[in-house]
Amino acid sequence: MAKYLIFRTDRIGDFIFSRMFTESIKKNNPNHKIDFVCSSYNSNYVKNFKDINKIYILDKYDIRLMIKNLFEINKEKYDHLIILDGKRRSVFFSIFLKAKNKIVVLKDFRPRLILAMFFDHYFINSEIKSQFENFSSVINYLNLDVPEKINYFNKYKLKKIKYKYLPKKFTLLHLDEKWFEGHYYSDFKYMNLNRKNFNFLISIIKKKFKKNIVITSGKMNVSQFNDIIDSFFIRKDKNIFISRKYKEKLIFVDKTNFRDLESIVNKSSEIICCEGAISHVSNVFNKLTIALVNYQGANTGIFWTKHMSNIKLIYRESIRKICSDINKLKI
Image 1: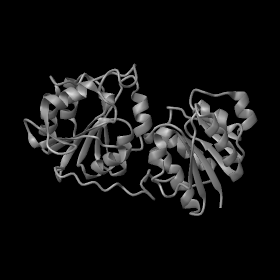
Image 2: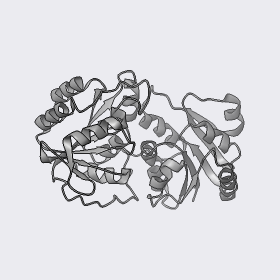
Image 3: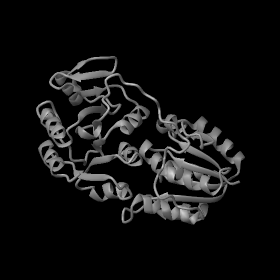
């Protein structure tokens, strides 16, 4: 039996991608022990996976917790320490940790002296290859078998949800903060979705897929999105809003956490979203996914999605252009 400590102190989608490591490790030997170093943001989600033994939270602002975790980790005497998030805090914290084999996956931050003194090996997380290919190289280095795909829900139970008005067949439209300017990266191209062009987007999706539509959103409070809901929907139930125009054929499910979203994705026929954690989920369930990616970051979109078999990428543009591209898709 070997002990693995994996650093993943970033987002949920990044953790889902890292499940290819846990699958490889457990396939090699079900008795291998896997612990994770997480952020406070993703730890509540990570704890739902039964094949993860223990979670440490790394918070650079909580020095006491950092020191506590330092002593607890060093007591475990890990065989392999693997930094997948490439964060500075993870690299510097791991300097003080003990492990027989310490490896790190880095992108832009490459402190040569620290890497030479404190790590056995490092990998470049280059966008020349896809993320799946990059991680496969690390798995091969560990003498493990690379999985054919990321079955992230192994040892994980989907949350059972029952929404009274959820149709049997529907197209899922996920409108998170990535659709609206001022709520994500400043160099992103934004679609300027608003109440003036919302109806046009819905009409194109209904015409293309000929199904009912379910809308979900992210956790962030976005005023432009709230304006759309107030203008076009009425509350039907505790967290269900029905379209004033289309009635039950277009509903918005409010206050969904990520585990709710997973179950809704699983029930959907296809999904339209910005590329991210939710597209990793839809890929696992083999749902047709239309994912919006930034034109300047097209390589980044391919970097995350190249291994996906049922995904169509569309550049982030105006709503009119996006609707035109959706309409042209061969499905």
